[in-house]
Image 1: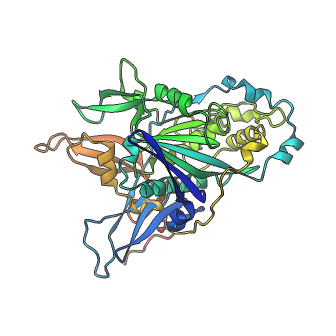
Image 2: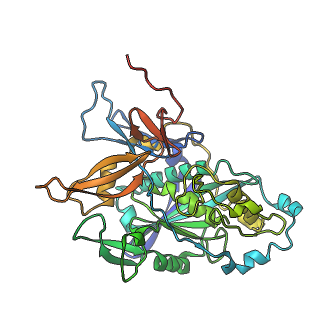
Image 3: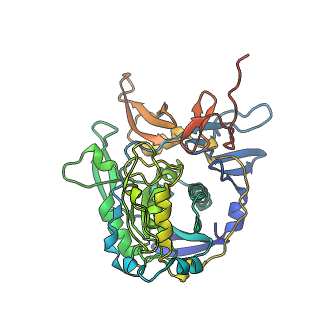
Length: 443
C-alpha cells in the first residue's frame, strides 16, 4: 500500500475522497513471498481473527457462528479454491494497434536500456470496483484490506522477474456504482433461472473511454458480475471470458486498463490478475512473439507453446505460479521502451509487511458459493480435484437431484483435504505459512 491511499466513493452523485493511512491499514497484513501467503490478522474481543490466502488454493476465514474452544479461541475454517478450468479471456488486443510504442523502440539500444531502467519497476495501480463487488464489504476498510492482500499475492507471482524486477503498489481505490454494460441471460448453473452478466467487450471499451487515462501507471477494473460475450445465441462457452487487457497498456496515455471478474472475498482474481497485468506489461500469450525493441528481440523458440507447462501467460489454461522465460523477455523489452517518467513514483511507498500466515487459511467457502450462485436453493461445496472445488445445490429441497456450478480456485493456504494445503496450485503437505511439512505418521 501507498503511505497515503486515496479512497473515492460516490455519495448522492457527489464524489467524496478519503485519504487513508496506508501504514496503519497495512499493520495487520502479513505475507510470505516464498510460500505465496498473505493474511490479515486482527484481535477482536480478546480473540485472534485471521482472513486471507495460505497458498495458491487454500483460504482461511473465521467461523463466528461456531462455539469458541475452551481456551476462548475463535474457530476458523481452511478451505480450497480453484480457478476455472475454462479460462478463455480473449483479452489481448493486437500490438499493432499501438504504432507509437513500436516506433519508439527503433532508436533504443542495449546501453540506453541499462541506463534509464531502474533495477525495480514499481508499477502504481489505481483500482475501480463496481457495486456488485464492493457492496459485499461492510466497511471500506474491509475492501481495502481485501485488495491489499490481493496485490500482495500478485506481487509474489512477479518475484522471479528481473531486469527490472516488477512489483505493484496499490495507490488509490475508486467505488463506481456501475461501470458494466449488463444484460440478462440464462443461468447455466441453475435451470429455469436468469442471471445478470457484464458484456465483456462493451464494458471494456467503455472503461477505456472513461478511465483509459489512468491516474496511476495502470488501472484495474474489478467487477462482481460474471463477464460474458453478449451474443444472440447464448451458450455456456460465452461466459468463459474472465478478464481483458490491452497489450502494452502500462503507462499508455489512452489504454492503461485491465479488467477482471471476481467473487468478492474469494481471492479469485489472484489467478487472473498476473496474466492480465502481464499483457499490460507487454507479454503476449505463450507461443506468440512481438518485437518491442529491435535490440532486445524475443528468442525464436518463443513461438512454441507447451500444453503441459501452464505458465502464467498460457493462452487457454494459465497457471498462477510463474512466467515463462519468453514472457519475462517480452516484459523486459517492453519496459525498455517506457519513458523515465513512468518509473518515477507519484506516491510514497510503504514496506511494512511482515511474514505471517497465508490468507487462504480463513476464507468461507459457503459464503463464496452464496455470492457466486444466488439462484441456488442451498449452498454446499465439494472438492473436485487438485486444489479445486465447486458449489452445488439440490434442484428441489424435496428431491436428491443435484446441480453444480463451474469449478473455482482455492486461494493460497486453503485446506485441500487429508491434512494437506494448497500452495502455488499444488495440494501437498504444507503448514499454515506455506512451508513444506512431512505427512503425519499413523500410530
